[in-house]
Picture 1 (cartoon, rainbow, N blue to C red):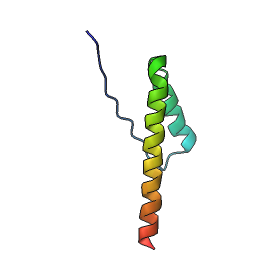
Picture 2 (tube, one colour):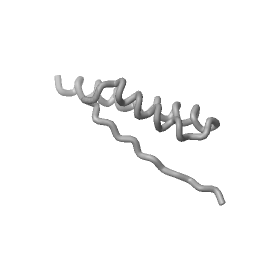
Picture 3 (spheres, helix red, strand yellow):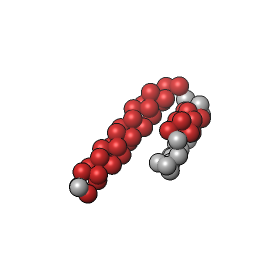
Amino acid sequence: MKATHQVVITADISRPVEEIAEIISLFLGMVPAEKQEELLRAVDQLVGDALAGLVSDTDSEK
């Protein structure tokens, strides 16, 4: 039987980037090596989307 897991990582954006990176790094240590690159791409996409949303929100407030 193959086990699957879903993990939700939430981070308070007021926390230092280093602290958020440490949380992600600890999580990656629990992920099989063959899945780490895929997960990093997904995290990169999520962060990019979140930052784009912040920029978009800031622009619309002006």
